[in-house]
Image (cartoon, rainbow, N blue to C red; front, side, top):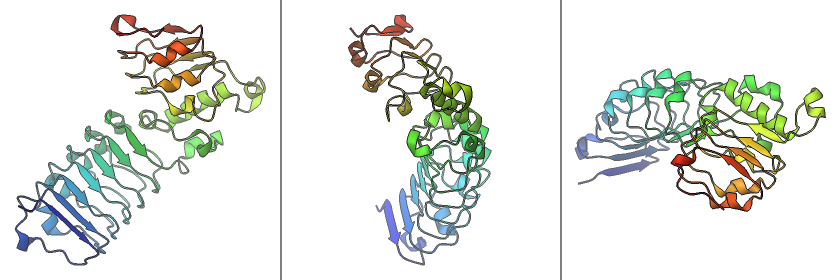
Amino acid sequence: ELTNFACDGGRRVGLAPYELHSVLLSLTIATSELEFVPTDVLELSNLTYLDLRFNVLKQFPEASLTAFPFLETLVLTDNELRSMPTGTGGMTALRSLILANNLLETLPASLGKCVNLTSLDLSNNQINYLPPEAKNLTNLTQLDMEFKTLTDLQTLALVWPQWGKPPADVILQGGKVIRQFYKDLLAASGQVAGIQGALGAQSSLTLRKYNLVRLPDQLHVKGFLTHLTSLDLSANKIANISDDISRLVKLRHLNLKGCPLKRLPAALGAIENLSISADFDKIENIPM
């Protein structure tokens, strides 16, 4: 049985002759000048992978949301989409949604129902904000999007390449939380204007209750925060800490209380005179 079908560069796609409606699992129709999703495609109810990149689609049909109950990967990059259907959340099996290089300005609130999503690519669009319902995407580990149009962040005058993109778990909470996240980092590094900036870098940084699931890259890249002596990561969702924490060589106090940790990295043992606060009754090892 043919379960995978790919067409690259063809302008007409006829699937009916192949009688694939019940067996096809993967379909790619790329660079085919498609202006709409063919009706035959909507009948492929067992698809788990659909790739329609490099076409001229201006919309994705609402009917598709019930047509693909098993769809795990949807690739719509390099089209002319300005919006996604309001019922996008109906594709509850989705794990990867790739929408880069379109003309999207918003996302539907129903996206928050795609709770199995682990990867969401929104890069090179015109999205100003994520819907509040996006907070429900707790399994998301990869989120790519642009920040140049996030107007509520422009007042930070922050050079994004300098600090890198915020963690996906912070982005999902919206512009206000992203802005506060970077204000906290900038204050700790001494890169803020006014009296606070004149006082120079702070020795402590508090990132409490940011819903972080891992150690933010901003703590160890570029060396802006290697001077920290106190770091509060309490009440987050961090289950594992990478060895990168050892780059904070001057750290003396680390608060991890309320984080679902089961192990601490051995690299913590390399930081001299470090005091750790954590729920040690749930942790299996104590680095020496």
